[in-house]
Amino acid sequence: GPYADQYMSAQTVAVFKPEVGGYLFRSQYGELLYMSKTAFEAKYTSASGSVTNAETADRLSTARTITLTGAVTGSTSFDGSANVTIATTSGS
Image (cartoon, rainbow, N blue to C red; front, side):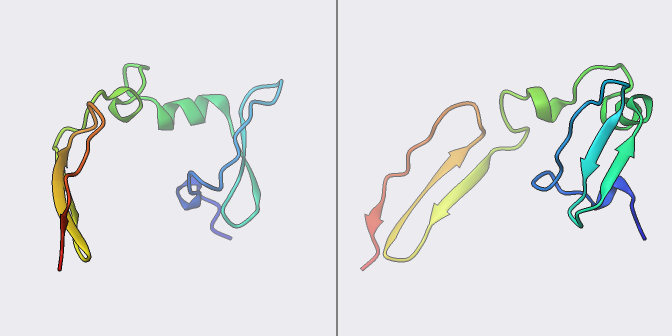
């Protein structure tokens, strides 16, 4: 079957490092899949060997607007740099 690692979701992958090195995954289909340490790190680390921006970002590169509709309405801009609150207004 198609056992490529791109079929694994973050929610269903259980990762651990066996003593001999490498990674064992449980795919979203329940299969146990092995990837060598070298192959795993080549695929999931940047060319410089550092972690990716998503793992270290202080904020989103583009802020998003969160909007409430229905019985109450309101909106706020969110960029991930701080918590936000939404002032609401009764819809009817």
